[in-house]
Image (tube, rainbow, N blue to C red; front, top):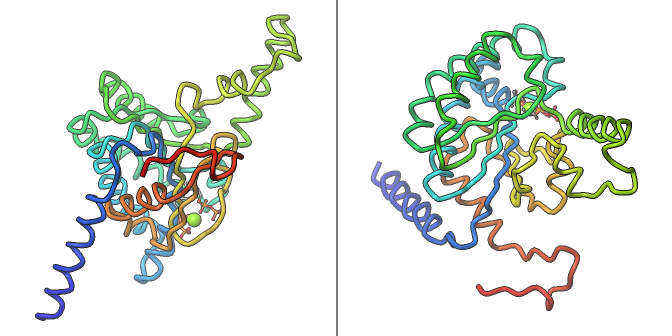
Length: 264
Ligand code: IPE
Ligand code: IPE
Ligand code: MG
């Protein structure tokens, strides 16, 4: 008992020390997270997959609050992919129901933390009740000036890239644009993330080492942080660890070490 108490105390000390170590002037402005492992978390406990999704809500709340508190400007959460529509109907229905419920129950947390909600993805394919709830929360948080929380819903990067290509192609068709004038910046402006800077840090939970069709264009130079933690267990300390990992990297952008000015 005593040993457990001491371990808890030491653990807390180190966790706090972690947060203290974060350099606030070198925060990533945009963090993107692939929230994975809900199903496995539930299965480990002998429960249905939806039990894991439900328990993932606390992880979202803690992460959003911590990101807002520390001064992160943009947080993008991969909540439901285009490919996730291929899951069993029962799981999709449960997930959509959970989404409606969570959007409504978490609105006070968003307001308290001055968080503005944003959504990317093919929202037209979402059920009506989800779209309605989503629009409500988008509206009530629209005046907030703190963290921009983007939910990727019915999102996949290849879908987004093709949509951008179509928009550009229409402009060429109409004579508004010449093919030779297409630039990287212009392409970026046609993505659903236009006006949001590229993520500097991408986190994936659950021990998988893949991107699963998330922000492929935008993560060109993101630092990748993979953790074995399953999403429902992810808390602010895991976010701090990821930020510290990010701050320990040398970002060279193709240059050599000597060219990169660091003032650690
Ligand atoms: C992530 O957890 C949530 C969604 C993709 C909606 P999963 O449901 O993918 O859980 P695992 O990866 O099967 O454990
Ligand atoms: C990625 O997780 C999508 C989300 C987190 C919403 P998946 O569980 O769908 O990814 P794969 O199938 O393991 O690549
Ligand atoms: Mg998964």
